[in-house]
Image 1: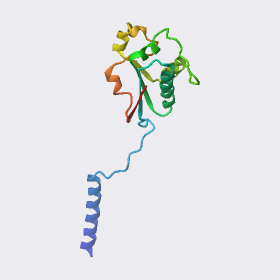
Image 2: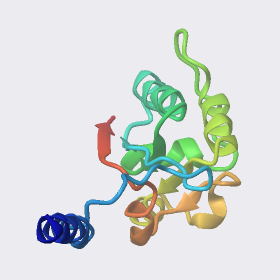
Image 3: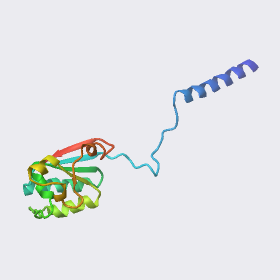
Image 4: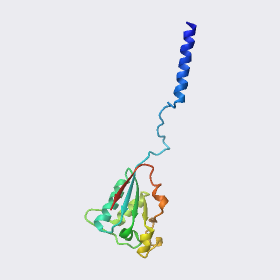
Length: 152
């Protein structure tokens, strides 16, 4: 009987060691200091057509509620983000200036293509306050989740 008790005790100890060795540990939960991973939305805007541009900007504002957002403007869209650019309006959408201000207030990065700025005869100094010349490393760090791309 004594040997059977020792044997069962040894089996129990080996079982606990095996569990620890296999990494069967309690599931980690997100702490209050660790923000949850959010998916990202990359908005690519190339047109300055009012309907197209305002749809893209409005979608970007809507997505900020629960996604990380980055707006990238190239081709003709660079003109929307220049100092002194007209406040574009169309239908029921908030205006371009309203959307751009809302995005910047929410901490959204708005990038403008440097080559397209140059083609338009402009530079980073010609951009609205808060809008930045695109830098390739910035495209990869704006979200830790998956990335959805919307092209306008």
